[in-house]
Amino acid sequence: MTPRDLDHDNVGDSGTKVLSAALRNPDCKIQALSLSGNDLTDACAEDLASALSTNRSLIDLNLGYNKLGDSGVKLLSVALRNPDCKIQKLDLHDNALTDSCAGDLVSALSTNRSLIDLDLGTNEFGDSGVKLLSVALRKLDCKIHKLQ
Image (cartoon, rainbow, N blue to C red; front, top):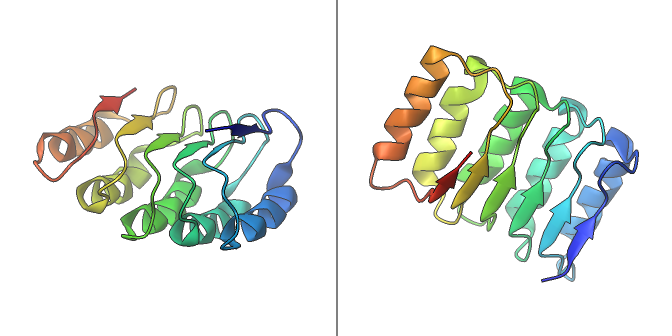
């Protein structure tokens, strides 16, 4: 698996929209993609979600150190609930996430059959968000093996 590393490359939302179109191409065989530290916001999340729902090869996605926020992760969670989403490892480290998106993540964790490694470090989940996530992790249908 050769990762595509675009960390800190100023890809931005507009570049991510173009990249997402490429990921939706059935001939795209990228398995790992890192877009860490590119100032991505919720403006590109719908395009990323569409790519995650259609791409059959991408299994490792690093979106850490961006600004997706709760609304961006809510859109990504829709894709994660799609049975065609093959993501196994997802990094959402330091994306200004709060309790507001915890329910969406919980829903994704209880339906996604491929996601086994999730990084939610350095976000602002409060007690209620952590409680929701904890309940989801204890369920038998949750496949997470590693949570940060």
